[in-house]
Amino acid sequence: MGRIFGKKKEEETPAEEAPPTPAPEPGAEGEVIDEPTAAEVDAAEPAPAPIEEVDVEAILTKMEAEHPEDLDWKRSIVDLMKLVGMDSSYGARKELALELGYSQADIDAKGSAEMNMWLHKQVMKKLAENGGKVPADLLD
Image 1: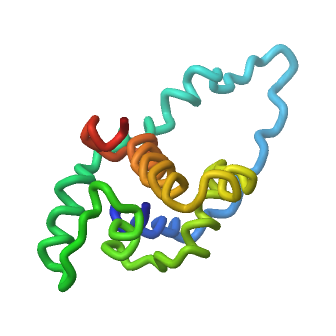
Image 2 (image 1 turned 180 degrees about the vertical axis):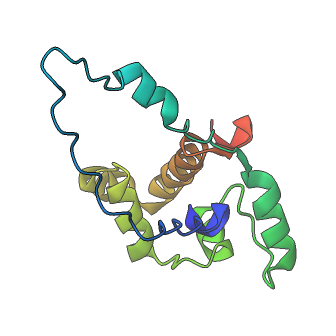
């Protein structure tokens, strides 16, 4: 995904931490000390940034135009892997398929062609699940 979406920006390191604030001394007898409520603490924390949707097709089409080989990444897992600079060997595809849930028994029984078709759909599905805008025809 990093090869298509790009690397995440490195987390900014916080400035030097201030020394911890000493605990307040207990108040005089009967004095009420206000402590923030859970709602006030939650309100003070910034909301997480919304996930930006990444146009996978546009990015891959641009990469394809700049690639020296004529690749059919929309239908071929081998070409998709080549396009993004990954090892597209049978061993690498088999390892990725196993990682994504394809069984060794299916690889043995069905062969590499069926595994490749399944793998292409799974990769597109994972891209969509992780913020990628993937055309419906690549998910079916």
